Length: 183
Ligand SMILES: Cc1cc2nc3c(=O)[nH]c(=O)nc-3n(C[C@H](O)[C@H](O)[C@H](O)COP(=O)(O)O)c2cc1C
Image (tube, rainbow, N blue to C red):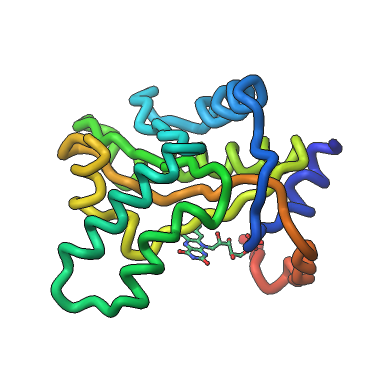
């Protein structure tokens, strides 16, 4: 696919189903992710790939978290429990903070965010779709612990991945003059 069209035509998909990318395709996607800009090459980004019975494990983690909250409705408990089944594959975006005199925490998170965009674009080029979601299940210490992450590791979001079902969203037409100024 034309590299520029891959960027300008990308849209997130709300409904995702199988097929998800093969392991061979994901190896290429992760290579792309690891080419994200990374100040001092601290390698802050890593990924947890969730599919098949991994989705059941993630669902249990979300469900247990929901049940641990005192002020939560049954509807939200179900929503958290079912969240992983919104796509056949999820890539959990993990940021690992390393202390560095020139690279503050925000720069390390920005690096992982650009790695996420590389993943999204690589998947799009392979005709798969995705959507980045956060909500209460990201930046969440309880869920990070349940996934075995360390204190310096944070979940920046979940990329829901698969093949888009239904209609592709229309791309909004934005006037670049509203967003770009010149000095
Ligand atoms: C950091 C981040 C967190 C997001 N969290 C959510 C979310 O929790 N739920 C959601 O519906 N969209 C979320 N989005 C937005 C979608 O990923 C998507 O960008 C949005 O629906 C617009 O669609 P588009 O990417 O096709 O323009 C998030 C985006 C970013 C960058």
